[in-house]
Figure (spheres, rainbow, N blue to C red):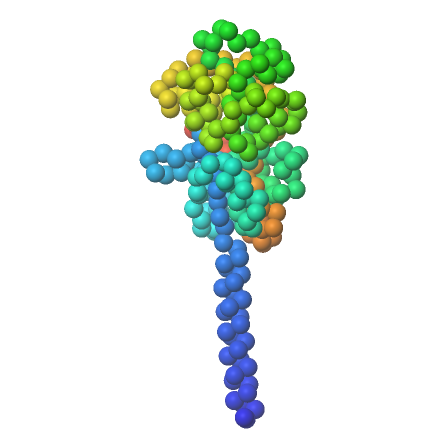
Length: 253
């Protein structure tokens, strides 16, 4: 084989390998996005995923020139995907100590205030301390940070807890009397009540459980560093634009 023929074959191999490497890199950087029904942060309306955090994320991805779609799943499934699959982003995610090492954190995107609620009509329920709540049935959402923190920080009897897959199903159980108390964000609880065509004033907050953490966008810790950095830089640029304040006015007031 001549020198020129050998060189041509070598060049073709290099070209093929270069394209193969580029294709693999593009595939590796593909972004999967998962979330749950947590209005008004993230929820589905008329077949479209929307909400404060969703619109904020869309603006960040547009700035980063990343195309992806948002998948709404039960929280436990979404969280399992985000902790096991690289290049997976989950939102809106509370940044808690037990989650710190699982994710690359981008934010904060919103404050987070968690309350223990009862129906105002349930005058038989008297809760002044967390321990008082143990004599009642408390509704929690599986893998939700608020519930996990509640269980971790308190010696809660197993018989007290009733699990639900979503905030909507948790509230419905409260309304029909299957449970006595729920743990929820204040504005999420109000939104869910309106969705059920009920007056939010029917709910009564009995205890503040957590007002010290915030919500973030969270990327699996094993995600492509280039992808993470693109999203991080894009978020900082969107943050400076004032969009977050405009979206708060749109969704939370």
